[in-house]
Structures are given as structure tokens and as C-alpha cells.
Length: 247
Length: 270
View 1 (tube, each protein chain N blue to C red):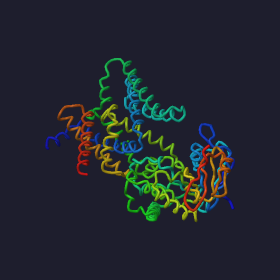
View 2 (tube, helix red, strand yellow; view 1 turned 120 degrees about the vertical axis):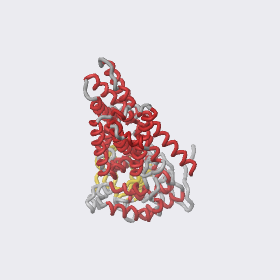
View 3 (cartoon, chains in turn red, cyan; view 1 turned 45 degrees about the vertical axis):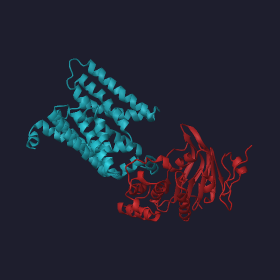
View 4 (tube, one colour; view 1 turned 60 degrees about the horizontal axis):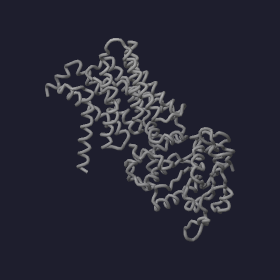
């Protein structure tokens, strides 16, 4: 099967200093990839390269030709802190702005209908005329999830969607993603390794290099081998996080 | 009331009235855009840099507005160039162009032989001395701005709100940014005659703050800003006529009074 995104020997960074070196990674249909790694390790840089926001210094990122003839059928949910919350824009307009994502050349009416449909599904139709500055963290995330989904993406990319969100919505968000994952591939960047490990199917450890791990369980030894200084991931009856022994 | 209507029989007053309408529309829309995008400081830099062009025009003896347009557009592109290519931090490169333009203006005015009587009207504006040619320029600018915003409204909104998302979507964001900065430069310069270089930022920010009291919708903000800009400009014009005070300052004063009153009313009715 041809992967949706094929990343080969990718080197990417800023001002000629590579943040990621020689990364190779495939994203296939129905993948649910968790991207983890320390701060400054290059998680966001990898996303930006995939989104085409920064040009690779070496290697390639290629997209499979989409059935609709779209070049990059991506939906993107940025970090909340990146959004200007004082901007005078309504929820409805934010969701409709998802229509600019490459390839979706729908009519104005079709865009409106799709936006209304998504708002209904997420249960935020009644706040569609509110300004984004008036929203709670959960409503904000739902709004941006609607925007990301507006263009019917084949791949959904989420950059730390669990920051500034209450616990109740966090669980709800991951349930949404589980349902969406039946049809589309998901790439989820998170620093909250404990939570995502039970939802993602595979893990990529990003710390200058990218280590792909074809399971959602990862041990301390593997993390050490990957040179990825983060908490260990495990699953159990009770949700828990196992911390490394103090020396 | 009849005395107010009589004023319109005066040619200079009718021209000032037209200037007030044109200035309100262009400053309302462009101001709404720059306030939403938080690029007020860039606009301040462009405005002040344009003084260099006015000085050069005095020195060489051509139309000062032409010099101002050239310097405004040049500084707008220069700020972008300094920031992106020379890698100077944006606020610093704005300040450099801001003061460089003013410095050049002062040098040229100083070198110009004789007295430069109109200098004050460029610094502080005088809506009552606006000429027919200037009115035509303002009218054309209004047509360009309105057409640009009507045709591209959705794209303008989406790029302004989330530039990174627009870039990821493959929109020509850099080209768009250059186009809008040129529109900002033209707006600032062609409205210098109304309130002057030093006071023009007020028309780009105070009506927008007032409009923002009532709406958080981008389109409504642009329209309401134009309305409040017109209310402030026209009442300032009357006040300046009856109290015989400088029109530019009177306009700013009424703009602030309108904002303050409505803000207070909103506070007490909530």
C-alpha cells in the first residue's frame, strides 16, 4: 500500500541549523501516530515541514495522489497559544476558514452547510456567532477541530491539542479522534505521553532524529536507546504514570 | 440649524465635508484591518517616514504628497526588507525607518531656502485647505480599498486571523502582505491633509476601539469603524469652525470623547 505521506531522509531546521536530521517516516491510511519527545526536540518543526511551512534542507516529503485530485489533503489544528484570541472573528467564520486548505473548491453555500454540520456534530452550533475571545478552552478546541475537518481531510494533524483544555473535554476529544480515525489518518503531537499512549496506535520519538515505534507501548530502555528523555509509557487497570527511579 | 446648512454653501466647507467622508471610509477599513492584525506600530513608522518625502518635495519643489507617497511605500517595503533579509527585529526596524524619515524631512526642510508655510498643515493637518486634486486622489483610493475588500474579503479575513494556516493552505501570503502594506501606506499619506502625520494614527485606531465596543465580527468592525470615524471627523470639523481651533486636533478630541462616552455608557448599562 502506498503511504499517504512518505518522508525520506528529511533534514529540516532554521537558519541553516538542522533541528531534525535524516528522518524517515511513513504515514499510512488509518494510522494514529503519536509524536512525542522533549521540548525543543523538533516535534513542531516536523509538523511545519509536513505542512509545507518550512522547506526541507535535505530529503523529501511526498504525498500520495488523493482520490479527489488534491495535492495535500491535510486538516490542521494548531497550538492554542498561537491563536490571537482578541481577533474580531466569530466561531462560524473560523470554521469556514478551513475551506482554504488546498484542494477544497466548494461553493460558498456548500462550505456554509459543511460548517453548520460540523458545528452541530461537535455540539457548538448555538455559539456559532460568538467571538472566539468569549469561548472556554473546550469550545475553542472544538471550533478549531471543526475548522481542521471542514475540507474533508485524509490526514488530521494536531499540535498539542490537550493544552489549556479541561479534563472532561480532553477525554471527549480523544474519543472524537478515535471515531475519526476509522476513516482518516491522525498525527498527534503531545507532551502528555501518559494520556495519548492509550489512544495512539504507533509512536514516533522526535529528538533531532525520528525513531518510529510500531506499537503504542514503549519502555524506558527503548526511550533511552532513542535518546528521548521523557517519562515512561505503560498501560494498566488504573491510569498511572511510572516515573524513573531517582538516583 | 440653518447656519450649519449655510456652511455647505462655502466651497472650502463642502470640500472639507467630502474629505471627511473619504477619510472616514479609508481609515475606517484600513484601521480596522491594522488594529485586528496588531500592526498599528508599522503604520506609525510608515506615516512618520513619509515626512522625509514631504521635505524632499519642498526642497526640490514638487508636490509634497507625491514625495510622501514615495517615502511611505519605500519605508513600508524597507521595514519588511530589514526584518526579513537583514534580520533586524521588527520593532527595531520600524523605529529606524520612523526616525530616519523624520530626520531626512527636517534636513530637507532646513536646506530649503525661504519659509515653508505649509509645513504645519502636513504635521497636524488642515481639512479646510484640502484641494480638488487631493479629493480626487482620496476618491480613487476609496474605490481601490472598497473593491479590494469586497472581492477578497474572506481571504483577507482568513490570512489576517491565522497567517500560518493560510500559508499551510498554499495562499500567497507574502504577496498579500506586500499589497496590504502598500494600501496602508497610501491610506496614511492621502489622509495626512485631514489630521496630519502626527495625528493620523488616531483615525486608524480610535474609531476601531469604539466599534469594538459593539461588535467582534470583522466585517461589522470595518463598517462601524468608518461610521464612528465619520461622526468624529464631521463633529470635529464643526467644533473647529465654531471655536476657531485647529481642525486636526479638534477631530482627535471628538473621536476620543465619543469613545469615552460610549465606553462609560456600556460600563453602566451592563
